[in-house]
Image 1 (cartoon, one colour):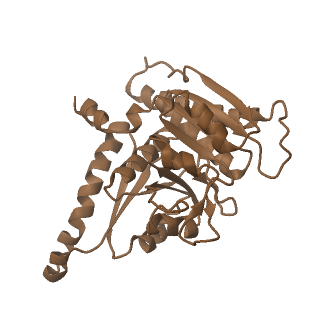
Image 2 (cartoon, helix red, strand yellow; image 1 turned 90 degrees about the vertical axis):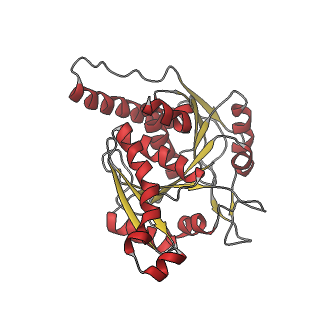
Length: 311
């Protein structure tokens, strides 16, 4: 009953159909991996919408879409295999978890935004995006980002998980080396990112480090109490720990008190040797995509790969 009540309040338990949109670039490979792991953990229906790389002649080649499709399938199978290994510890009678009811692949040479909008009319709850031009800095303003799918990010009611691969940094994100950090602020969009991070961690059988960075409270500054400084952050992470326990995922909690969260997040990436940061984002009004100062700075300075979950 406790689990059902918690799932009724969550986002991930209500995701029934997933769309994975990707090209053959590094961001596309990362989106295929993470999207496949998510699908494999949740055992839901998914569609792969494969785009040709930017800069190549837009000539659809037979079999090109198989590369992204195969990466998604491999991730799904890995998630199913890890589920079986966990289940056997509890019961030898547990059978192999089924793959999604259907995995459909479509190859497109159209502009991503228009192609995705057409596909979304069929009804999806969440999108994983891996396109080289899905998120890049806007030359007009250092705080905003241009995007080939800006209209979708602004209008889609579900979550849009945007993969940002850092292919020049080792170690790369892999199913055997996943080391996830998720900043947790207690907001609604941060909570969705936490749920997505835990689902991916469960699929690849790894843990998650949840980091809360809170500014010192006015009262605590005068009282000089370390415990009171840390209390708000501990309360935020307490619920995340419970979520991890329900899903069988180990959650390491880190609480810091700083006026600015970004230095603490960058420091934790280095200290924990994380190769994937899953961060929640909320698009602010204005020209270009603006996710707030904190997310923008992380996109600019984070040395490892990111999954930006906009909701």
